[in-house]
Length: 203
Image 1 (cartoon, rainbow, N blue to C red):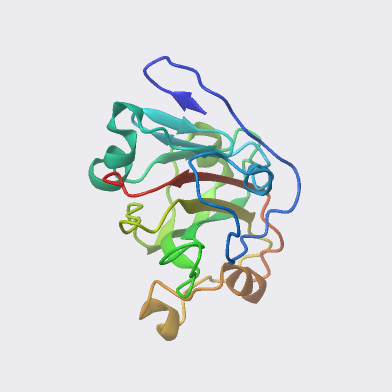
Image 2 (cartoon, one colour):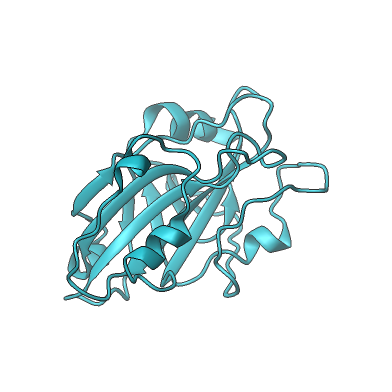
């Protein structure tokens, strides 16, 4: 993780299971990264906001109003994967598995962003374009709900079939199953994944 003002903090990365699971957290929520959360990230995906680059699993610091900016001010980040295959197409998902809270994820997963048909050549440059199925929605964790995980999952499209949301999926952002969606369109497993954790900036 890099603060783009030049301050370098710690970075966590893992190469184990990327499955974005819903579930309760048994220990008291504190602003540190658990081992299981650290193991989510793999594949070299970079998510780049104006003053913050997420290049591994991390908790967004309280400093420099970063939690407020990511929830209120900044729009969609740049997304880069240097090892993307130039001629291939990719699907990008951003989800919150902790809606409305990690202790009660009754709306898991909340879909924050969904883009398909992203060219690998654009991913290499961090200038992604494609078909937007869900416009980017900023992370806005409700007050007093603890840390939320915001997970970015990148899939390589295996064929030329058209990818779309069903009418039922279009009607709601919550209760979405990214794995079922990936399976429906033959996307396989995510080739890269990264996440950041943040809480309501006023908490």
